[in-house]
Length: 400
Ligand SMILES: *Cc1c(COP(=O)(O)O)cnc(C)c1O
Image 1 (tube, rainbow, N blue to C red):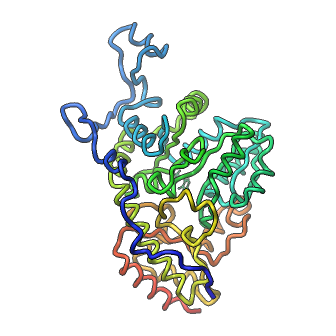
Image 2: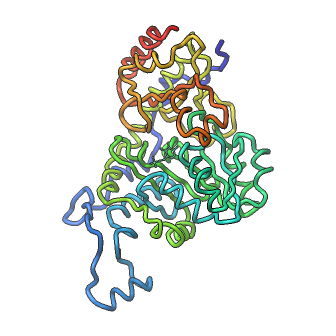
Image 3: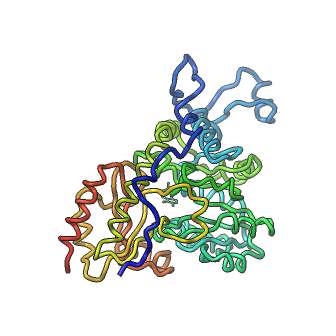
């Protein structure tokens, strides 16, 4: 029934991924008064000592935060940290991943222009492209990102190539080096949603991508207590976003949430290998389970897009056989709670069957043929044997 090959020994795989970045995240130059954690600059504005300081700051001759819809020192700490982790010159924090995505894409694509996006990109990105963009006269063509020929055929004349590797729900990979080479030949800006891999497991800028997007609500924050986003890239690209959309659309990150993200980031290199190991153990056992038809986990892919992944996150999906009653399976789970989002400490389950009922007509899963027998797991930080026992008993209770 299941013919996917086993390609690894999960227990041997999780180790030290971030190297120097682990030190970067644990070690700060002291903040004011020798504090080891930065203060939360809970202020809307920053005053000037005199006329000349204000005028020089406005003219760009002097650096000082002006207003927290632009710059805020706590948020700037987070932005600097993400830029370093991604190997970028600069980064910009946002109030959500969608604020980062919309402000970034709209900074580079305008009325009468076209962009190319991978199919099965994040659902609300798809809804943004399908609901708002037609009214702005922006055209979006969707491609199978795993097929470089399909991407090459769609690129001519586009302004932006929107990647997400692996994709949402189906976890399809893209060959970043190949696709960014194609885009560069035509002067097309490339973006990637790197929320799944995080810079611990994938550094897209080193493979030619221009701008790296994150829902920081997921692994970067890591504790399911914050909704936030960030984009990282060259100083020139971030400046362009600042000028075109960032302060005008107004989706800024709050200082307190910037502070929570800094706190979350410190354990990113510890959390990710744990998610990876538990995720692989569960994926392997699901693959061997009689009620599972296939497991959509990048570890089982032979696609060249795998070569830029240094490891695997704990989010993946699988398809169950016809004789599994999916609502009964989901309801029987105790440790996997039913809910959207992912990347936190807690295990979660999303059945595609329910997601397919969301926003009829502009549902990317429905459009691109995601099977209603697909189930997504976010494998959290709980004991993996407890999680597996939970899954096993839920299968037992889900016979039709
Ligand atoms: C959650 C998510 C987003 C959107 O981020 P928000 O912070 O919820 O706005 C974007 N991309 C992916 C892959 C996501 O999972």
